[in-house]
Image (cartoon, rainbow, N blue to C red; front, side, top):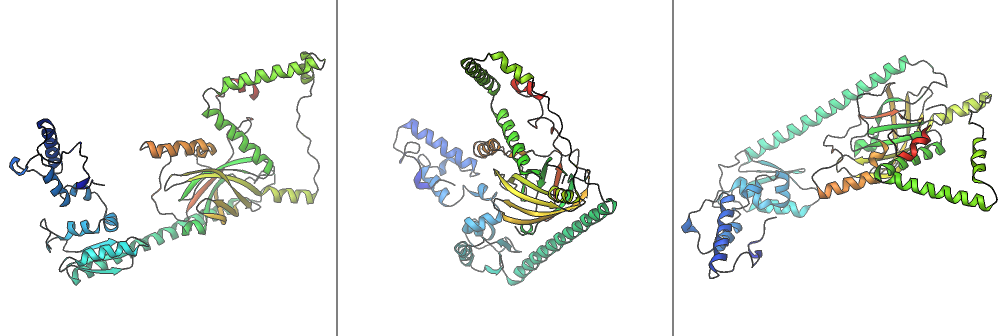
Length: 452
């Protein structure tokens, strides 16, 4: 906002011209530089004294704000500066009505849910002789005569109608193409065996709320989604315990990355723990070496033998395997705000893993929101980079928050496209499932020996 003329600091702008010559000269140079910067080329004789009186005069007349007002959008001007907007488009330099300006009229977007601001804009228009206005929904038509106003109104209506019809056609065509992909995929899928069917693939997702605003074991999957207004990552499993364990490992890895000296600190703590354990063994009358021997004598882990399952057991196992429990993190694509607290989902697949349905919770969308998806491919795009679970962690939230306040750099992209139902979700197997921490190397030195 521009400073008020009466709010100049006394130390910077002397009150009169009878101050010491050095201060008066500095103020004069400042005033002349400001007037020149805003395009007011005045001669020396126009500036009397130190120029403060002239600067106050041009500020009150709004002559030093034209450059700034020219960059403000029509909506912002209509909401916050209605008088200045009317002057810019319908008055001359002397403040008199000028019918040679804006002859076709204007379609000014009205501020939603604010009668006061709409009233201010209408009042500013009514003060100009010969200027008319007419409201149409959320738009105020302003012009010099009825003919011009009607022309603007019809053009505005036709434009909005064309854009709406185009958007509906695009959505319908995209739905049709997605349906064809799903139909084609469903035809190629033979009834799979229980040991081969998995939910890995690409899905076309439908969710009415967003439009308006499995494996045969407890295997863990990861997924990435983009629902237009929100995007994020999720972890899936048919077993709640496996899901919780995997999330714990991911969170541990996130803490390892955030701590610069974690390896040294943890190594010192482990050494201290081992020393404490040895002291306890000595006190009990056992030698430290016996603990290692007992540990070495422990039989090597071997895979469990599969028990023969009955038909009822197989049916129950297949049904539970097609229901996945999910944990989800994400961010709003509009503001880029990260929601690091995991939200819970459930997802149930059909026998062929060709479609799913379920419910999900997400901040600012709702709880127990119904959702369904149809698979269009068994493949996941290899060239596409998916955000991981830790991209939406608490540390990522803090980095994004500090970035918004302390620098112009924002970590997460902002989405300006219209949100439709044509959104995607990709489910894939984690790349490092066999690694205990489910993370790629390099690791801190103390953990290298634990990977085998």
